[in-house]
Image 1 (tube, rainbow, N blue to C red):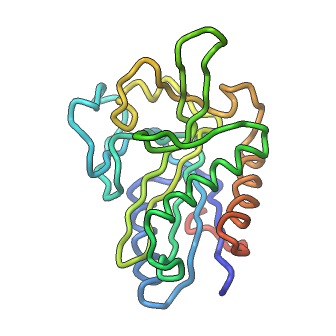
Image 2: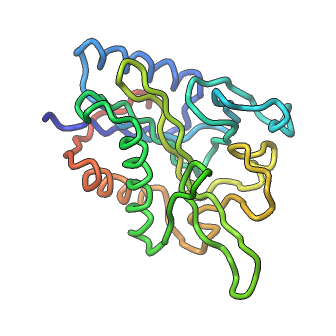
Amino acid sequence: MPQIEWATSSNPVDYETAVSLMEARVAAIQAGEAGELIWLLEHPPLYTAGTSALPHDLKQAGRFPVYQTGRGGQFTYHGPGQRVVYCMLDLKRRDRDVRKFVTDLEGWIISALETFNIQAGPRDGRIGVWVDRTHPGGPLREAKIAAIGVRIKRWVSMHGISLNVEPELDHFTGITPCGIDDPRYGVTSLVDLGYPVDMANADAALRASFEAVFQRVTRTVPSLTP
């Protein structure tokens, strides 16, 4: 199969611009006019509401712009220091198996985190990738380090994953992240966990792990934006 294109934007990308470009690329993939693409970027601070978002989970409505989005899931935050990865992949090449696709996305993040000796994994009933922050003898504490939210349109995926490298974690307090309002569960990042990882290191780990999990070679292409 042809190589998957891999693009990285060096400057923050406005959310509406990113979605418009992503939708155009997905339409081109569906029409057989373009190849699959993984697009890495950052957004300015904003909240997005997935198809299952509940109004009361937006705690600070005026803090940042809020965008309705067609991906699954509830409210999430995007902003500087968080690596957003939009995955425009053709599931017809993957047996049209949505469940396996989501599992592979989880495995991709987990494998990338293992590069930094971080043990993470999925949790039953809680979407995303989590790390254990329980202190010996203390109550259960877990924190989400990466979110997953996808939409499948005519068997081509949209949206994707977000990995917390070094975002401002206080920005998550304006929402109930992914609808989970439980003091045992929080949000964390690579730097919050004590790993001095920059975006370039995270990107390298994500790329190597993607090729291993999805068993496809990637090819660097110009970004959809500067």
